[in-house]
Length: 387
Image (cartoon, rainbow, N blue to C red):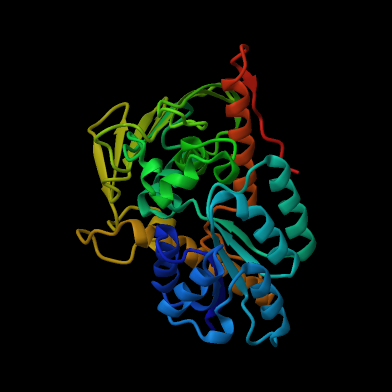
């Protein structure tokens, strides 16, 4: 298949996530990075593009001029997709403008600032027919996909409880006061949105629960805290969850957990067995049945689900990790775009990535979390109703 031409908004000099996206998109050779508006500062945007080798005529000072210029190009030259890796406040206006223009969207999480914005993006994409992916990249790990397939196949029985924890320690001090770019915008409500750590990493935790279990949230009870002096947004959170069907859950997300780097882990308990997966040891999935010995499933080994095997590139014993998982989302996005172009239906193993509806459900979850945390009546009805 012909490579998919994409442009990027954000992700220039000093940005971590833009480089990760470019590497992930390049890993399978399905995407071609051809254009960019890589910073909100026009001079920095152009300088970033030059460093990355973008041609002068497609190295744009801002996303608005990029959209206008790309639409003026012949169809066979213009970008087919845009990757949005800006601070959160720009996700919505950029995604809406490019989606309305018929350009596929690959957007970093969280999706936007409000559920209202998310629903507007849903209406926009329905009208234009574009593919819209939200890059909750942890869903790309082979063992996460195997966990999902085991739960959906009923291997664990009736799900009773889910515990997900995401602990980091990088904001344990006032890093935002030192000129640290990534810390600075994440603690700023104007750019980050209505939440801090909950939006940055808690959104991943919520998405991981839904991806693996398929459980629909009914109620939640949230406690959000800003331990950092003067911070207006949470840097630590504890949330109790109730799901339709009776399952219960706990979600913990913290960026002030000293000593923790990227400690994301999930445990799923059914009435027949349980599963444990840990992001810092991502190639193993621990399965503990009610009867019989504990089992460890390894990435790439026989007996895994078809989706898990498809997501593995190397034989057992050869570790695959963060970038490969990220790249698996890009593989699914490419499959969806090519199928759209060809007018064909995706097979069950194709198009495996978080969608716009996943992003919208996440925004609903974040809004309900804030509402609960600020209310004396902590338990709130929290069922998400797709539009």
